[in-house]
Image (cartoon, rainbow, N blue to C red):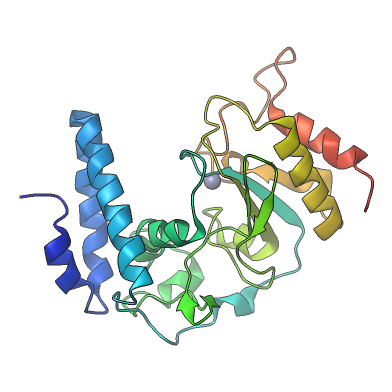
Length: 252
Ligand SMILES: [Zn+2]
C-alpha cells in the first residue's frame, strides 16, 4: 500500500478531522527515509504538491472560526533565525501548504509539543486565524529572505508564528527564515546585511543577545545551520557576522 495515495486523500480532506491521519503518514515517511532516499523525496514532494494544490482550490476542510491564539501575543523582544532547508525559490503558497501538513496538522492531532494553548485546539478543525484575501495561510514565519537579499513579509507582527517549538518564545518573537538550505554553509553578506537592516529598521528594541538561532531555542534542531554558532575560537559561526552587522548598521 502506498504511503500517500492522492485519490484517497482527495476524499479524506473533505472531512474536518483529516489531519488525524497525517502523523501516521509522516511516521511511515521517516521509515522510508532510512530505506530509500529517492523514493522518500518523491513521496514528500507528492504530499507537498497535493496540499499546496488542494489549499489553492479551497478543497481542504478547515475551521472558519476558532480560538484566537494571537490574543496571547506579547511585546516583541526576540528574533529567531531559521532556514527552509530547501532549495531557493520557495513560494509563499507552497510554504503555506507544507506547514499546513507539517506543522498545523500534527499540532491539531495532538502529536506535537503540547503547549498549554494547543491543548484547547485538539480535535477541532484546523484554523490558523491568519487570512490573506480570504484564504487561510499556515506560515510559521514573519519574513522570508530571498537569496538576492529581498525580505518578503509573511505573517504580520501581531500574528504569532508557530516556529520555535516553544510557545513562550513564539509569543514574544519574530521569525525570519532564509530561503535556502544552509545546513553546512552560510548566507551571503548581502543576505546577512539585509536581515541586519530589517531587524534594525523594524525591531530596534531587540537586544543583540536576543537574536537567536532556532537551534538555541530547541536543541533538537540544527536550524538555521550547523555553522550558525561558533564551534571554537578559530571558527566563529555566522551568528557573529549577523550580530556585528546589526550592531554597525546605521538606522535608515
Ligand atoms: Zn527553524
